[in-house]
Image (cartoon, rainbow, N blue to C red; front, side, top):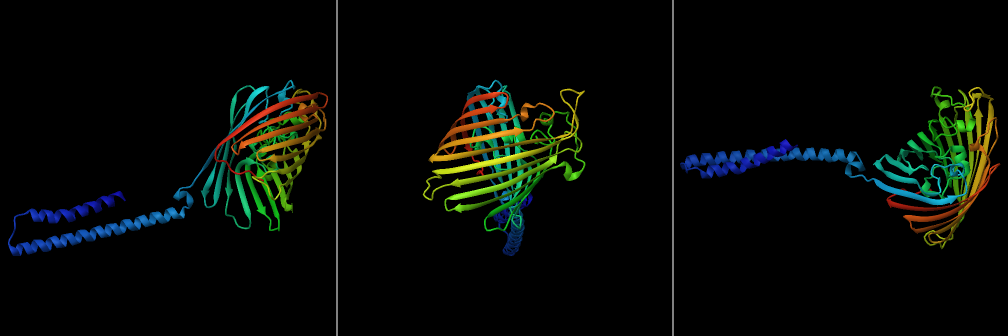
Length: 447
């Protein structure tokens, strides 16, 4: 392109130079002058014709370039990317000797004093007319004061599939229930529910895979989803996690993916929502998670869950206030533990058995006035004893009132009290404070 533009400029220079040079010469006889004039005219005409031809070719080339750019979609014309940063800082005190024994979530407060359980960098934007991209990179400081980083989510989402279909692919939280897919800064309480950390481990259920959803053609919202994911890693606690010996007490058995879907994690979900009245909305859901565990070469785990959400907001609400909401989830885990060698005693063989865990929580939120919300949560987690003692699977009950104030939509202050009761251990009292701030943009949260 640059060579053609240079050649065009040279041609224009020739057009100007030829008559200038001819005018500078000593006048010739008239007949000769006529000959020179005709020659100048011919040269000028040829030069102008050459320039026009070059301009035509360059114009066609530019048009082709513009057409190619238009075919590439929004990205070629200047796509955008939202960038946001959300940080949580916790402070407080607990009577528990080991706070990690009652606060098992990876983003829960872990020490008396101060901690930063979650600082999240979020990136999202349009890839092209067919996909959107999302990523969440999390930094945190553990109970020992060491910093850590993790790729919490990184996935693509289709935007233009027919028949009300949508596909998500990459690393993401599985859509099991209401709480598991939420990031810590969108929780209504400082810590994760007991039953979620019991069944899905300290960091929730998430992995690499693909999820397909279908919006059913019903008169009210109904969506069916199914995810197929890897069953490995620390975020697949009930399945082939390297930490799962805390559940079954045995030596972990290495199980490579060799039998197709049987070695992968399958997570189906069905959810529906409808307006109960003009001021009340109800959301109901059922979920499951089925996959292999590493207590033996063919052992499996099944997890079932039901959830419900109800919200009342008057027609004359201002900025979403006042409101009243109720959220509850119940979960049950059927863990098929194979005959296995005890991790604590290599000479001991534990029998094959079914380990059962269950639990539930219910939380109510009252939006008293704009940006002031009071909450109360009650919850429990229970587990069968099995052939070995595991503190992780012990019975625990908790009650938690809290109060949250949002100075603006970009910051919040929260105070929360926890009353914990653990079987054969006793009760503990905890008082936690939390401050959150957001800078930049952040994707909207699910209703």
